[in-house]
Image (cartoon, rainbow, N blue to C red; front, top):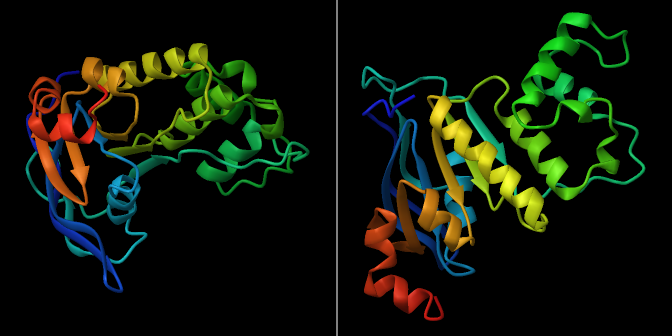
Length: 240
């Protein structure tokens, strides 16, 4: 599905200050439906803080607005979120099925499973190469498996906006490539805006539609070619 052509996510003059520390300063950014916007920057640049501001988890100045195809702001914005990591005790008895049902339904997980729900979840997980994991305990998942399950959970139901905060940190190479293939398919087939915080500059260069180089404020914003060719990028990543 092609980009809707609208500026879906509008971040306007977002600033975050804690005490005397300015964590973000006057951030402005648009993210389109059907496109991947990558946020890059050195450690401490404010990347995760920006996602928290979008999520409303941190007090901030400015406005975050999401507009639909008609340009009218969406009143109930559906956001999917995949964190950098999720700590799961290896002994937890909860399964992938238990987690997904608890996220998407008020039906108690301890009651007999409904075939229609099982079928729906298995079909949804299949899009993330994770259908065989439905009955697996969360504590037994590998890093790559857990991140694919979290991505599946974040897109059930389909969100307007998908936020990914370094979602493949600690995942092995095979799991990394699989996750990125799935993410690319989501971008091509689902009408949602995707914002990804990433340190994987090779992936950003190859697959992002737009890149925001952040260092508390916006340093450079544009296409990957524009940002990676900029002097601000060379100062932020001199070894690249």
